[in-house]
Structure formats: C-alpha cells, structure tokens
Amino acid sequence: MGIIFLGFTVIRLGGLLAPNSAPPLATSGAGVETGMETGTQVPPNAFLPDSTNGDQSSLLENQIQKPAATPGTGQTTKPPSIPEIQKKIQASLPLQVPKEESLALPFVADSEIKIDQAGLKTSNEYLVYFAQNAKDIPFDRDRLKTVLKNQYDLSVPPFKLIEYVLEGDTSPALLASLETFKDVSKAEISYFGTVGVSGEAAVFNKKMIGLQKLQIQLIDKGLAVLSGSASKSDLQDFYTKWRNTGFAENRALLSGSGLLGESEGGFFKKTISRVAEFFGFKKKAAAQMPSGGGRFTALVPCTCSTGDYLIYVSGIPAALYINQFWAAANFALFLAGPPFPGMEGLYTYAGGTACLQVPFCEPSGFGFLPIIMGTGL
Image 1 (cartoon, rainbow, N blue to C red):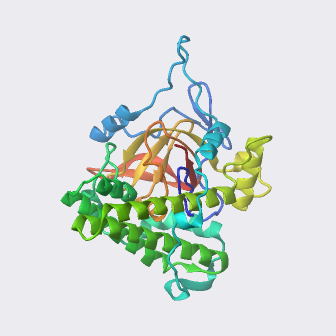
Image 2: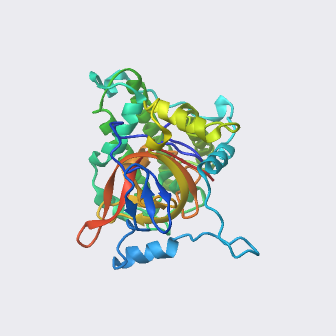
C-alpha cells in the first residue's frame, strides 16, 4: 500500500505501467536541476507553490527542512543517498510475529469482484492502474473537510484516530472522523468490485478488498469503545494484531518488489535491476527507471481536492502527489506514522498531476503519482 503497502515502510502501486510520461529524476547541477533524458534545466524550486499563495505558501516555508550543519565545520550535511535510505528502511522492518499474533484477512468471494479475461491480469498492472485512477472513486470529498487534521492540515489517518480512542479521547469530532473513514473504506470496496480483473490481478484485488474489510472491523471496534459497548483492552488487542498484519503485508510487498535490494555487494545496481524486472522493464537502463528517493522537505494540502497533498522531496525538482484514496486503500501506508518533514522515503512514479488550490482552484505545484513507495522510521 502499500500488502499494499504496509508498514514502517510502505509500498504503493497504482496506475498503468504504460511508457512513463513523467520526467526522469533530476541530478543536481550548479544551481539548477538537470533532467537526465532531456537535458532541460529547471530552476531550483520551480514547482513550489507561488510565494503569493497566502497561507499555503506560509505553511510550506515553515516546513522546509534545510540541510543540517555538521558540528564544528560550518558545512551542511550531505543528503541521504538511495542506498542509505534503503538500509534504514530495511533495518526498520519489524520482525515477523507468530500467526496467532496477527489477523487473517476477511474472505472475499468471486461474486464480489468483476472477473474479466480482457481486464487487468497482473498485480503490477493492477497497482499502477489504481494509482492513476484512485481519483475517480465516488465519494463526497466535502465530508473530508471536517475530519480531524494534524499540524500540517492533513487528514489524520484511521489508525491514528484509533490511537486517540485508546488514549481516552471521546470527542464528537473523533467519532465523526471514524464514521467518515468507515464510509471511505466502503467506497473503496465498491470501486474495487468494478475493476475488471483476472488471474494474478484478481487475487490481488481480493486482497485489497480484504484489507479494507479489516480496516472497517478496526473502526467498528473503535466506535464500540466510544459508545461504551466495548472495552479499550479488546480494542488494544485487535489494534496490535492489526498492525502486525500490516507489517507482514508490507514486508511481503517490499521483498517481492525488490525495492530494498541487497544489503551487501552491488546494492544499488541489484535494486534497480530488480525493481525494473518487477515492473516489466527488465533490460532497460537504470537511467530510464522512474525510481528515486530522498528526504521529505514539506507537505502541502491541495485544497481544491480535499484530502490530497504534495510531498516535496529533496533531490527532485517537483513533488509526489498523494491522493487521499490511493493512501487510504493501503491501510499501512506510513503505518509508522503520517509523513512529516525530515522523513526519508523511496518511490517509483509514473505520470503526474497539478495540485489545485483555493480560491480559484488554479495549479500550485506539480506532483508525480507514486507507484511504489517506502518510508523509514
């Protein structure tokens, strides 16, 4: 999610792995960012929101993480490399737990999905397709305007809301937020049932639905505590097993994709090769792979698409566009906690879209659509 995409490390896949339409990753030049394939030069921060864009610009400026100075030298710390981030993520993956300490995904019958031999056939196709089409999931986004927000004005994810319940919060806003996200999960399940799939994609689609059903169970238990019909101890037990399940799914996805590569010898080369093969690129050069990583520098909501936001990342001249429903579908995306400035991540992406801001819903920043994403603690 991140499977899809769970854990302290998250991986998400969506969209269609058609030829990648997004610009390649850029490499730093003397004051510019240079596109690897086209050679075009992009001024630093060219895709940041307009400095006249009111509160959103202030939010961005307050978050930007400048490189830390090395003590005693006055020199800034070198940004983390992809292999360094890979190792951190690999080290943050929790150990597997016994089966009895996790949860089985709810059963999903063939009648709950759309079997279509002409539809999506592989998990790769499915995940990429979903990343590019999650925006089309029918849901009243106005409801997301009233859910609880964090310090970056982003929606607090369901698992964090459950933690609030466990901490003793009983506010009407918390209850309403849980009910909204329960309906988001129901909308996702309905959407998954309309996607034509067969073979491997059908199996993957059932897992997507199963994860959402499991999240609804978690939310229901949280609502039961708020209503006084269940105990916090029962919720805590289920929540712990829910997180263990998420970590297990995340580990499986990360291992299957090869995003983390090898811990020794030819680390980066092997990683690029395996990610390329996973997405059907097999013999293409590493420079053609839409893959990279860096430190998150700022988070900016796309206020005309409630729930969506941009993650600005050091080392690329644009950002990552996080769709609310793409993120919600993988219940363990950022399971270690919501993204924050200073967090490090790896990703592959395909295509992109503009972030629209009020009052006139004009473009303010551009973001690549993540296909796979992994974050460290």
